[in-house]
Length: 158
Image (cartoon, rainbow, N blue to C red; front, side, top):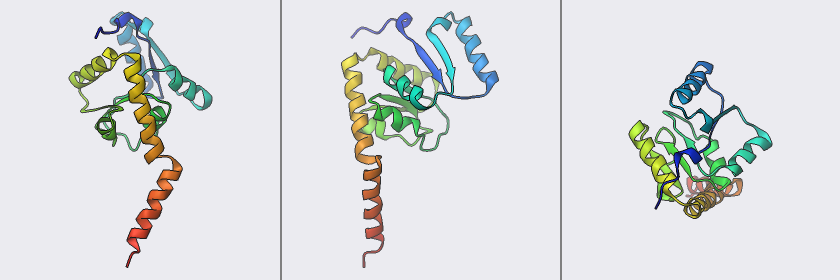
């Protein structure tokens, strides 16, 4: 399968972070002559956040440590495959075949991104739909409530 040409990629970096680090990333994109492919948008909230998810083909969250990370189920719910790191509790991305869950290092991130970029739109959509199903079955409020009731019933069985 042919790889998507790098000049067709549009990468949106969303979220708040250390201003000096964000500036360093911007300067690095200029030095590497890829600044035209990067759009740094800062924190995105409300309707704009959901529109950004819907306009995307892949959600990437490389992190050393993250709690449950609500952005992962949000992205999955909108039908996006997710690439994140083992600093998050999202091994289900691999087991449910709806994304990538990798140790954070350059080689692994490069490999996973390359793999994702080689998938056609249909395969990415299939992965995204599996992710959406995962969120519906396991993380929507009704599903969580059912599991909590089961847990309490089990705890108080005699």
